[in-house]
Length: 426
Image (tube, rainbow, N blue to C red; front, side, top):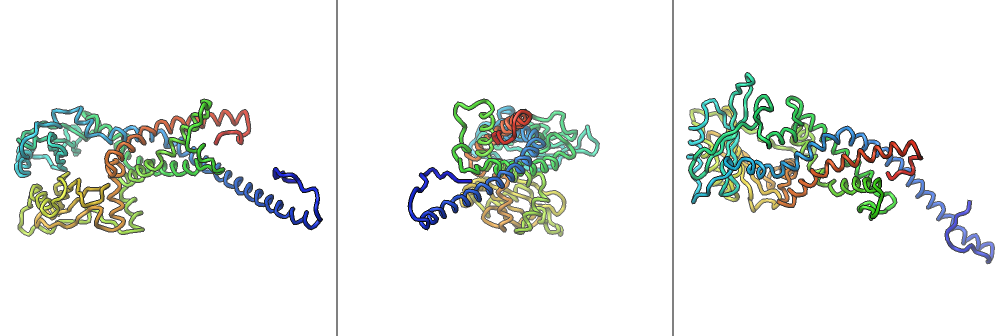
């Protein structure tokens, strides 16, 4: 078989010259044949990855729609919650907030004796209230506990109101944003929802990776791979929407899915990270025995951390749990830290007031720092408004990716009955 190189065939010259001219031609043939064989092998592998991507998408894609859309809402959940509940969230700004001791006393005086304080959220802006989460024994579920929110005016210590957040029976009386959280991290399933969503996130992570493998242009046609074809048919437009939306959201999706696995399957995730670098978790730290000492109180714990690390604003505080529990005091907008992750948390002994551990991007092992990035990446807070908008848009892209993927699958099924598979777009 001859190879047409596009040039005129030699017509004269000595036999030696004609042979010499023929050698490069044969080399070119061999190179092209080798390249063609390599391309066929890559396409065969690509077909395998396409099958994996297809079945991962079909099995986990429907969940991705719910998880993605609810995640987009939760990027701005405080704003939505404040808009839905302005009387709880907003106050008239005063000259100066009251000391934490006064606010703590007001909260404890209002709370039922059976209440167990779980978390304190400090206001971000002057017109916001201080919120405090607490648990109460459930009347509907024997042995269960309802999670509540209490809202305090930080300038007057007046109670703005209280509401149930997570009911023990899982649904009744739950606010809109609490519903969104349960939909996002548990798909509204009570017992197995959290680990199930974690496993789904693992499948979706591999779906994104296989999608990138399938997207990669084997023939080097990068413009075609990165853009929509003009004046394309509906079938081609659907295909282009799927591949371009998948590519442009892939980096954000990978970060969000990986951090989602961390939050839903923390023990497995920490163990995996620990293989490469030691990790430290707050549960490893405990307060020393009381030895006749009274707990210092959560307001005093916050003051100790604020004095030792004055940068930034108080963000949250977790009171102790049990006799050996520790306070966890977190601050935000710490300018000296990484500009993308500016939060710092400190663990404080409940009796001595000693700071047992500082958790921030500037300290700890590589594994610790990697874990500290997960929540800011998942919420988009790591990159400010840019990060939040990117995570918001990635969530909105989930139903587009699923719908175009299902349509493409149906198109290929119909086409396989009429023509050879090789004529399809992907």
